[in-house]
Image 1: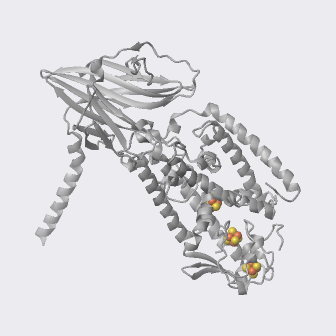
Image 2: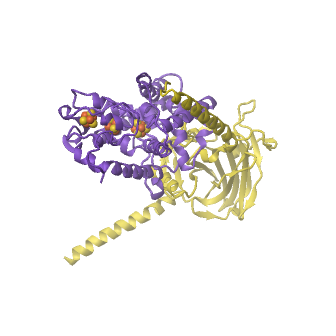
Image 3: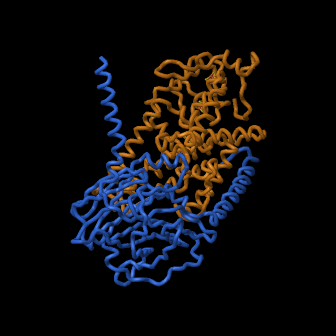
Length: 310
Length: 329
Ligand code: SF4
Ligand code: SF4
Ligand code: SF4
C-alpha cells in the first residue's frame, strides 16, 4: 500500500518536474546569441506626431540578455516604404543614442506610416565571424501632417546588412472598422537569405513569456504561425501594457561566417491607442451636439400636434 | 418579489457585467447577442454583429497575404458566421426575447433614459399607426446591411467593411459609458461621410429614445433576428383568449405600444415583433391565466387579479392601474 502511494507520488513529481522544465528546455534550443530590437512605449508628441523608441539588445530574448558591448560596428537604418526609381526601399540612417546604458533608436512620424528598421552588427570570436541583423516593421500613426519632419539624407545600405531577410505580412492586418488588430489570424512570414528563399530551415519564434515555437520554412521560404489567443486578453485585462512583442530568429553558416538574423513582431492591442484623434474629435462632437439640438426641436414641434410622423 | 423589481435588478446586474465585467476578469467577447462596440478594449463583451459579418474578409487584399492556403478566410468567415448563428439560435431557444427585456445593455440604457424622462414628468411621444408601419421594415433593412450586403461584397471585387457598423448609432452611444468617445471622431476608420452620418443618426436616436420608450428596439436588427426564430424557443408568451375580458390593460402598460396582445382573439402565441418580454402586460392583466409565460410548456408566471392588487397596493383599482400614458383603452 505504502509502496503504491510513493510510486504514485513520484509519477506526479516526475510529471511536474518535466512540465515545469519544458519551456526552459525549449527556450534555449538554438544556443547562439543574437541581436534583436525591443519595443519601448510609444511617445505621443504634443504636435500630433508619434515616436517609437526601440532598444537594440543582444543575447537571447526575453531575459537572457548579454552585454551588447561585445558587438562592434552597430548601424541602424529605417524606411517608410518609399521606393526609388529602381523600386528599392529608400533608407535613412538612424542615430544610435544611449538609454540606461543600452543602444537606443527613435523613429518619428507625423502621419500614418509603415516603418521598417534594420540594424546590423558584427563580432569575432573563437576564430569565427558573426554577422548580426535585427529587423522590425510596424505602423506609426502620426496625426499631424503639418508637423515638422526630419528625415535626413537617404543612404545606400551595404548588401550584407540585408542578407537575412525576414518579411512579415501580418502587420498590415487590422479590423477595418475598429482599427484593432485581428489577433486570431495567422501570421505569414517569408524568410530569404541573400535574396534566395531560405527553404526547409528551422525558424524559432519566442514570445515575452519565453515560450518557443519551432517552425520549418517550406520550399519558398514561407512559414505560418499562430499567436496563442488568450495571451493578449490576459494582458489586456490587467491593463499592463498596450503592446506585446515576439522575436523570430534563425541562423546560417557560410564557411567561417555565422549569420544570425532576427525580426521583432509587434502586437498592438488596438490601433486606437496608437492614433491621436483629439484634434479631430471636436468636429464630430460639434455635429453630434448640433443634431441633438435639431432633433430635439423637431421632436418638440411635432409633439405639439400629438403625433409624430417620421 | 414583484416581477418588475426582479427585472430591474437583473438588467442592472447584466449591464455592469457586460460592460465592466472585464475589470473582474470576465470576458465574453463576441459570444453574446449584445451591442457593445469593440472599440473600448476593456469591454467584457464585444458586438455580436461583427463576427457574423466575417465572410467579408474573404477578399480582403491585406489578409490575402497571410492566407495559409487559398480560400482560408472565406472558409474562416463562413465558419464564424455559422458558429455565431448557432450561438444566436441557442440563445433564442433558452431566452427568446427575454434577452431584450432583461439582459441587453442597450435595452437597459434605453430604459434608464426613459426613467429619467418619466421622473421629469415629460410624456411619451405617440406614433400614429402609419408611422409605426413605416418604421417596421427598417430592422429588416438593417439585417440586409448587416449580412446580405457584406456577403455580396465578399464575392465581388470590393473588400467591404460591415456597412451597418459604419453607421451604427450604438457604437457612438454606448462606449462613452466606458469613457470612450472616439466614435464621434470625424474621419475615424469608416471615413468622413460615414462618420458624419453616424453622428447625425446617433443624435437622432438619442433624442428619440428620450421621447419614445425603447425606440431603438423598434429598428434593432438583433430584435428582428430573434423574432424570425422565436417559435423555436422553449420560452413562450401565451394568451388564453377565453379568459380575456378585453380590458386593454396589456396595451396600456406596454412600453413599446403593442396592441396585438389585447386584440388577439384566436391565436395562443402572442409574442410580437417588437415585444421585449418585459412582462409588464402580464403583471397588469387582471384575468387569471389570461396571459402567461411558459417554459417547456410549464407556466412560470401568469396574470391574476391577486398579483395586480398586490403590486398596486390598493384593492379594487384594477383598471389603468399602472398606466400614465394617454394610450386609448
Ligand atoms: S431589441 Fe436590440 S437594442 Fe433592444 S433590447 Fe433587444 S437586442 Fe437590445
Ligand atoms: S407585449 Fe407585454 S411583454 Fe411584450 S413588450 Fe409589451 S408589455 Fe412587455
Ligand atoms: S390585460 Fe388581460 S384581460 Fe385585459 S385585454 Fe389584456 S389580456 Fe385581456
